[in-house]
Length: 473
Image 1 (cartoon, rainbow, N blue to C red):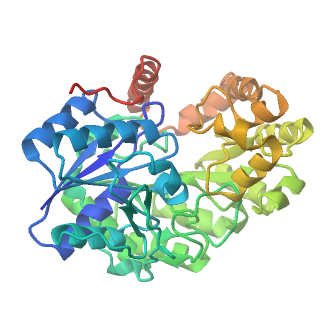
Image 2 (image 1 turned 45 degrees about the horizontal axis):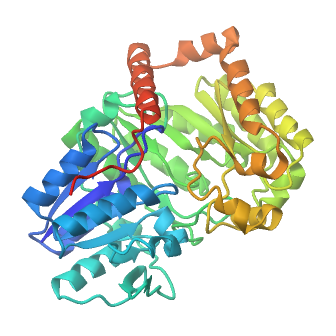
Image 3 (image 1 turned 90 degrees about the vertical axis):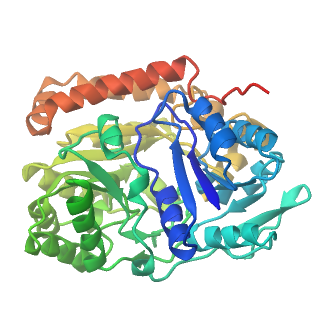
């Protein structure tokens, strides 16, 4: 059996290896010896549609698995439709956050045969077994098509023992290619990097967050995490790990043990945390332990400076503790980034300005100002629908973080995107901040090359790349 795994193009964002697809390949190969898998990451090639067409016609996969994010629906429709015309018998499956939280959106793509929801490893193996036996029965996390819709399972699969999972199928990757491209962390201190999940889920209940892993927090053992690092270091030359857990530092003692094991085993590596650590669970001992283990860059997610919104969003972060963690990080020579979100439902302009003031009151090297996107399947989406109504929200059906219009602009008429641009202008026009960042920035020449690659991606996006591909009949 042949399985083709697809990551659709999304040209405007940084590119990191598609870790979820690598896990699917690894577990399928372990459970079904003899299976062949190939990966096509359409974000990293300029002729993705042509390569896809050649794989369909020459390699003839039995299963196509497409990872989906919000805004991918038209792209997925084009991929699935073309596959069905070229290979009428191929099984086409979609998974990822979008399929998990808005499965109804895929009903109109009649070429899609099934959905994998939530954590995909066990459900995907069930899919492979079903296809091999000519069946399509529902299973936790697996929804086969029945008529015009999908038979959604009562629950999604949750994997309790993460140490029992195989490591991702790294053989599918060109590590050097990903190292040359702009990525989630913005900076790269190593020559080759890999993103790494050391835990799944988050026990907090922030209303804006997808919960593809559910709310049952599960951790890999420190030994298992460090073993993955050792294998990547020795076998693939990976010397930087970008840890992208939802909440890596939930268990303080586990963090300290991971750091200790890295030192005991003499791993010469760099660590970065581009996905945001929980700032009010950081202290100086943990920050120094991370630095000794190789950390050079961390991110702290503040989101909003409004105590009212912190409660409404159920983030409930201790803002002063998080702010002090940022100061400690800066003091100890780590590149320190803050995440801030602008334009929540019910947010006033005064509250928006308080968040901006917080961002510029801290000695951060970098700040990211995200415009709020209420994604389907989140309580925040329901709150936004209550505010503007389902008809107006439907206008933002393919919205992502770069969309020209936003929920808040639709709701209030306030041009929050203009404020976002002004924030970035103020951030990067500060020569003192720029010098502080430049002093700590690793591989300065490489970063300039990545900025050039980022510019090329943006230009490609404006030329139409990232939109649904066109295939000849």
